[in-house]
Length: 407
Ligand SMILES: NC(=O)c1ccc[n+]([C@@H]2O[C@H](COP(=O)([O-])OP(=O)(O)OC[C@H]3O[C@@H](n4cnc5c(N)ncnc54)[C@H](O)[C@@H]3O)[C@@H](O)[C@H]2O)c1
Image (cartoon, rainbow, N blue to C red; front, side, top):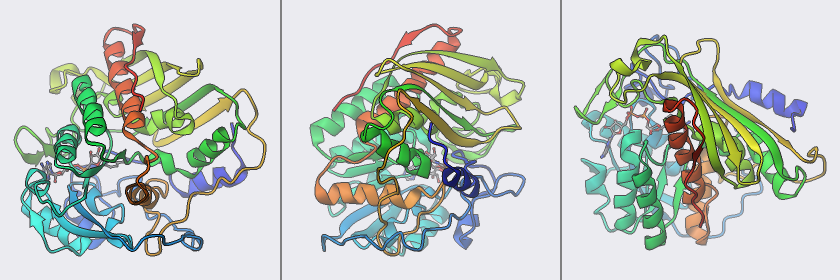
């Protein structure tokens, strides 16, 4: 494991806590440029302003005059539609935005400096002038909207997770990306954490050998049901998609600490769940019939090694998205580990300073017609492994095979 003092300092200062799941009360804070807040009025972890390295754009080389025409969907509690800086990229024009809720739609239009709005993502993707969409809607809608957008010829960037608990949706998404030949990238924020990015560079240079063991965790305490978009009522309420969410349905922040480092996958899993003391995380109190507040998965990796990946909602003392890797070699040697340059005007953004890098990577992949860093295979290998882990937890840790996605 590499754990140099500079990385430790970075982890501390970046407040690696995070957050992926936003909370009630966040609604219009985003309009004032504030981070979303939880029900107690505290800023949601992960959305703290991250200092962008003042030299981040110094070596950025413009290589195209083309502006990709982008449409953005979703300005919910986390205001994610505007958070990745599409509106600031010199090779992007945000031409349309959408949210089902009109005041959010207006907020997103204002935040992106864009006049055109559509009442829904479904309507927006019919606009033939749009080349690419960023889907930042509620998790249950990601797969359906991504498939529809791909079928309308759009490149797709999607917030995590790629699919929501459905292996069928995963296969459908994979086939649609292959069939349409469009780019698909999942915006998994851990990929551009400084440590994970550095380990990926070192791994590729052979400095770690195969990974013997890796571990990652996403700890976020949800002691009370949280507000969020509710696909059933089409309202924002405390019975939204986050209520009682099986922890391993949200596995990408932790699983990235193997898959994002190596590009490999998990082949089988045994996962334990902890019957929760938190009421909304008890099976009788949520639509998922999920009895677990914490799920700890032990995976076999495609290299033959092991990974322990934890997602926990009911441990008040724990928070953060982080991980560690241990290879056959000790990781020493010289290799460039800093993150790629950012286009001028694009900030690193939240979640460990990852937002700007993810957006820039997606735009670069479209412009250069190359595979994006978090392609559909990696997105699904991360997401589907968690879905199978939850199935294993429901069977008291039975060892289960995991479907594999390879481009
Ligand atoms: N670190 C991370 O990667 C991270 C952090 C926070 C949130 N997220 C992800 O970002 C996404 C958004 O999170 P949130 O908290 O803002 O969600 P949310 O549930 O609060 O809001 C979702 C929004 O999407 C809109 N929407 C739903 N269907 C739509 C459609 N068909 N057309 C247009 N708009 C539609 C809703 O009106 C709502 O405003 C989630 O998928 C979440 O998992 C990821």
